[in-house]
Each structure stands twice: as C-alpha cells, then as structure tokens.
Image 1 (cartoon, rainbow, N blue to C red):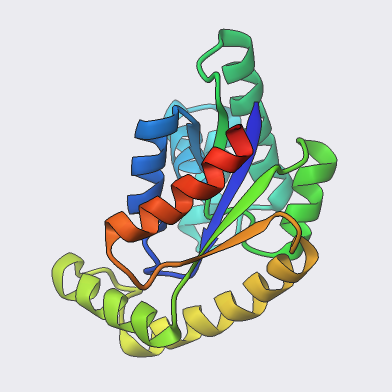
Image 2: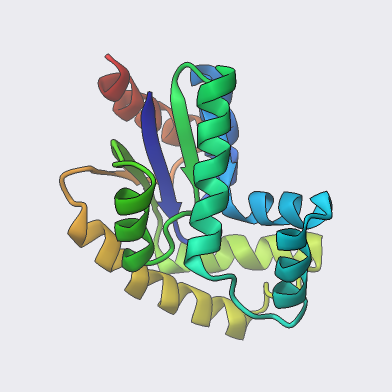
Length: 189
C-alpha cells in the first residue's frame, strides 16, 4: 500500500483533484480536518477536549492529529477497506509535521504538489468568497494565508524533493488531473 501526501496552497484545487484521484485509484482519503470533526462528533473524551481547543481557535497538537491519521490507517488495513493506499490531503502543513509523520506513522511514497501562482490563488479564493461567504476568504486574510503557505510549503518541498511531483495547477481540471495520473501511474506500476 502506498502513502501519498497532497499539498498545495489555498485555492489550488486539491479537493477537486483528490475527489477524482479517489474515484479512479481507490485510495482511502484522509483529511486531518475531517478526522478532527469526526472525532468531535463521536462524543469521545478525546473529541470533547478537541472541541474545547477548536472552539477557542487554538491549534490541535500535531501528535493528536497524527494519532487520528494513524488509527484510521490501521483500521483500514485491518478491515481491508483500501487496496491502493492512502491519499492524505493538506497534510503536512509544515516540515516538522512531515518528519513526525514518517517517524510515527509510515514513510511517504509520493508527494503531489499542486502548484499555482499567488495571483491565481488570490483570484480563486476571492471568487469562492463571493459564493461561500467564508470569513477567511477576504483579501487581507488571503494574502497572509498565501505568505504562510509559501514559507512552510517551501521547506517541505526542499526536504522531500526526491518524492515531490510538482504539478502545474494553472490549467483546466482535466489537464491537472492528467498530470496527477501520470505521477500516480508511475508510483503504482
């Protein structure tokens, strides 16, 4: 089974591409945000403490996120719910998280980096804001999110350069997906 990280800036199209990759290849999709929300919804003691952290706008410690990812991966292996492997969306967000993932969970086999310009990210996020009314999609917040992403992501790409496939995500959804498929076909061959 293979482990693939999917990284890219806000508005790069990760979600759209992940949906298509899962459909075609049968990876189990793991999103740290979804795992956190599921744990809170479960009503477990850990979920209650996560709810408290998240309601205060505090970050969830990396070790808790890693535990949730690892538990979900182990459960999938035991139950046989994936033959292909794991598609981990939007994680790691910074280098230290990647290092801890490989130390405590498993090595990463491939990193798909959906690369778009700052201008494209800004344009897409402002377009999304007009539709979704998301509070974090305003010009000033977007600029800050992109700056932070570029800094943190650059460290990940540099550390794992031998595993990163940089995909130009400026094109159409189909063009971007074709590039992702080429990388995944090589991995799974």
